[in-house]
Length: 437
Ligand SMILES: Nc1ncnc2c1ncn2[C@@H]1O[C@H](COP(=O)(O)OP(=O)(O)OP(=O)(O)O)[C@@H](O)[C@H]1O
Ligand SMILES: [Mg+2]
Image (cartoon, rainbow, N blue to C red; front, side):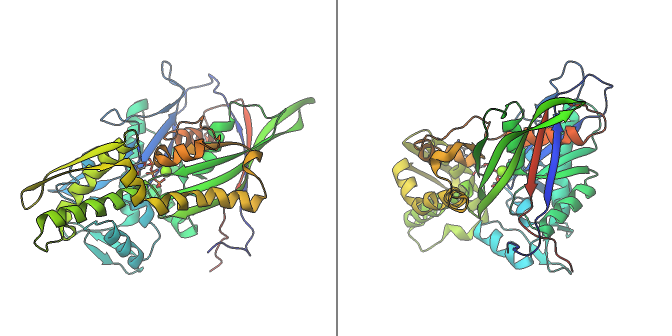
């Protein structure tokens, strides 16, 4: 519940950005910890390396699956874990970030709705424990620690030196329990968390750091539709006059005015609509009363291929679906039009606009008062992007990388060894109060 009583935490940070060539100190990292994907950036002053970069994983990808798996006594993370999802769906833990700080029943309902066949047990805290084939029970925090450790190891491979310090980006709707859970996971992973940062503030830093607002203040909405969650943040960029060493200077800053969200609404919900559609079609083809939904392996295979179909549909009017040996050695082939897909997700498109409409309503601003709507998050590439663009809205940031890159600026600013020389004030607050018990 949003706290109307407790004063929100206001955080003002001045970033002093750009990198000086003072002594080479250990690098710092930032992690945009998504429910499905993790994006990692580093700041380091190694000669020959760009000072701020998104790190690539072992498959040369700029985002990595936020997954951990246990198979035949081995722990697999990221791409390796993704590689066995369709074969061993019960062994590959996904959506871990969104299970942090949640009660057992919430996690149980969530995995059931996503056809994830995990062996869950309720632990003494009333949280979900994840039981592996070896009988070991891990908490969500422990699983998340393994995923975060993987992120840091990618950063370390990039700089070829150990990295301890990081800023971790979290969604705005995380309450204190979730935030504490992330910090615990980071501690287990041996990460020194310089700060948590809201995802939208990471994106706002990236947006504002190379701009000058002294002649023009502006409202920008950052709209993020990821895999499971959607939010819109209204951010006001401006500048004020100050004196530095007796000289008048103009200092840029931003203030987060409002954030509205819809949890359980993202690209994955659209995928699930396709999964249900194709499951029905396959059941009909079987025609013997069998429901393919009862086979976790079949559902994992179907989900994997549906993801491809969905991505093809974002650029084409028709897309195929092909699943080899979906069920009982039977292959399944089908097609779907974009029109049908849009019809299946009709209510979701409308819902996905709600956070933008809400921030406008609560701020008394009109679409024309907004300088730009910056789209971040993978799922905004789908139909929604067209929809927003039709309203003359903008997109300057890299949808996948803005949060991690902006968060790395804060990591650099908070580090001991990296000196930066451009200022951007950040004012953001938690929507939730602290609990006093
Ligand atoms: N080309 C594309 N067309 C349609 N959807 C896409 C495309 N590329 C990525 N997506 C979708 O974007 C989503 C992933 O986005 P993102 O990487 O922002 O997620 P996340 O940060 O892990 O999730 P969240 O922030 O909600 O926890 C997935 O649902 C994916 O299918
Ligand atoms: Mg995200």
